Amino acid sequence: MTAYIYIALFLSGMASLIYEVSWLRQIGLYFGFTTEANSVILTCFFLGMSIGYWLGSKLSKMLKAAILGYMVCELVIATWSFAVPTLIHQLQSDLLIGLTNHDDLFWRTVFRISATNMILLPVTLSLGATLPFIADHIKNHIRC
Image (cartoon, rainbow, N blue to C red):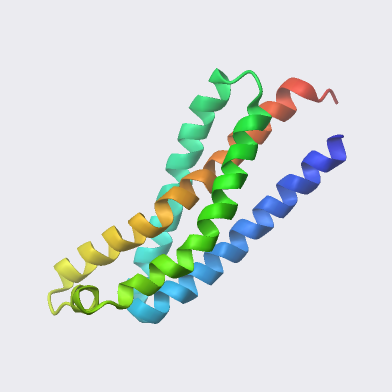
């Protein structure tokens, strides 16, 4: 039983790194592969992960079975990951292209941060929450 949990945790971490690189490249196609665009995307990714970790640590203490929280997070990650490419493709609409490439750096950055957070926040919150849930489960159920 213990080995399955460690394997699931390893695969989850590996998947999150693959998602990060994939989404960075996909969003980069619309924002450009500039330092500014990459900074916005990575900031949004890690913001969601850190907020998710904080929320997961609070919620895992409230649940009797933290493994259920972990399973829900993994389900959200898997489901939302299928939606991300479609949502990113929506950035190509005429209105959004104008905002994405706005002449004013401030408004361009505000739009890019907003768009990236709307697309990635649900999944990055779940990615961040997986560790506290699984850690709480291991702490409560596995004796070393």
